[in-house]
Amino acid sequence: MSSISAFLGRSLVLLAILLQGACAQLPENVDRPVSTALPPSSGTPLEALVQQRRKTDAARFESGFLLLGGAPAAYGSRLALIEGAQKTLDLQYYAIHADASTGRLLRSIRSAAQRGVRVRILLDDLHSTGRDAMVLAMAFVPNIEMRLFNPLAGGRRSSFARMLNSAGDASRIQQRMHNKLFIADNVLGVTGGRNLGDAYFGNALKGNFIDVDILAAGPIVQDLSRSFDSYWNNERAYPVQSLVKREELKAIRERAQQADRELADESTRAQNAAPAPANDEPKPGAAPTSAQLARAWDEKPLDLKTARFVWAPAVMLADQPGKIPADKGPDQTRAPGLVVSHPGDAAGSSRRAASLQATSDLAAGSDTVVEGLLQLIGQARSDLLIISPYFVPGPDMKQAFAAARGRGVRIRVLTNSLASNDAPVAHVGYARHREDLLKLGVELYELRSEQAGVSSAFGSSGSGNLGESRAMLHSKVLVMDGRLLVVGSMNLDLRSQLQNTEIALLVRSAELSRAASEQIERGMREGSWRVELNDGSLLWRAPEGSGLKDTSTEPDASMTLRLLLRLFGPLAPDQLL
Image (cartoon, rainbow, N blue to C red; front, side, top):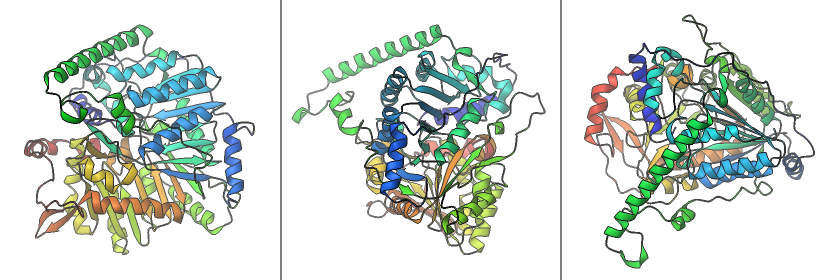
């Protein structure tokens, strides 16, 4: 979620539920031509590259993986997939923001379409308003199809107006498609926590997300494509042309351009009024120069020929699109069932593959991705390392943690502090369970909000170097017993468990698990506050080497924010946060 829209989105959904009565109207009898992923072709450069890398590495397993912890690698991997694609590009996202980093990606996608690549873009519709609605213009580019999942009715100038217009359908609009996929030629694909936008690639001035993706190669990508197809062809997916016209997008673009001109004029006036600093440094209040942006933002494609893949058995967990029910009247219910792929490796008889098969069989009895992960937690024997930026444990989750602690499993959870959380209202759902979790023996860490301290702790997974912008946690990672790595779109909260659709990759690899654990543990140690119980009260232990003092109140958060959440937080139920 973006730094502002996540908070607004949750707040507006809550408001819409309270103001039920308006009538949302979506188009009927919409034409949705069915299309599916094309099979991998041995004649494409990406397929040849994957096969060559597997042969060179003498890999025992057919699928390979590369962790993408840093913004340059995350951005560069997507550029590399766009530039290397010859047949297809499939993108599935919760949010795509109309800003500089996304603009570069979309221009490359246009070029790919011009050279004959079939492009399909599937976007959740909650945030496609205002400036971000300009992304929808991609639907009118030849060779590009774009659909909106679970759309809201009404115009796109105001998120608030759309929410009010759809308030009578609140039970549906609070359920969102949260999946993230970026797939090229059905042979290479990226999944994980990132949406597309400046804040996800270290290029935002006010706040940047710490996030983790994973680049997958080989047969596992075909499982990701099958999940994409199930959403693309679902009755909840509406072609953009059925919801918005060119004229509306043109008007939105003109308003955005006018706002940009006014902002530039204001920045120029501020710059001219300020005294000239020494050493030719930018004047206070001035917008960043192109040189600043160039220093902070790496737009180079990832070199896939030298990228080091780890070849390992893996399975995909994906919620069915029916988790968000179609309009069936007041008695509509969620369609249960979790899609769990088979490890499907030629070396499937190996101990690692057999172990992962048992893992996938266990998860297959669950209804959702999060419930599948709770089943896995039930198999932990020694250690659980978890990152969940929005962490609101429901009864099932707390029970799973209690059972694991009863078996002697060490559980460490890294989440956002109040100051680093881009959706402060979600922090309420975590804070009300904090003492219970600590009493269970769960170790809790909360991210520092100061980017300068966090960037060094998380290495290149932090954001760019544009001043002292806020750091915000957005990674969704689980490492179990040092050998199973889970990277996906899900949070460990009731919204991901009950409302949103999610996707995750489970990779059985001690090497990848170790790499992820080392980065997470360093981030906990040097970039996070450790929360403890001290004589019945909460105490935040300062990060190692930070020079900060321990504190007995939410660190770095204003008294006003703490008071507002204390007053209004109890009104928000956990399942809506």
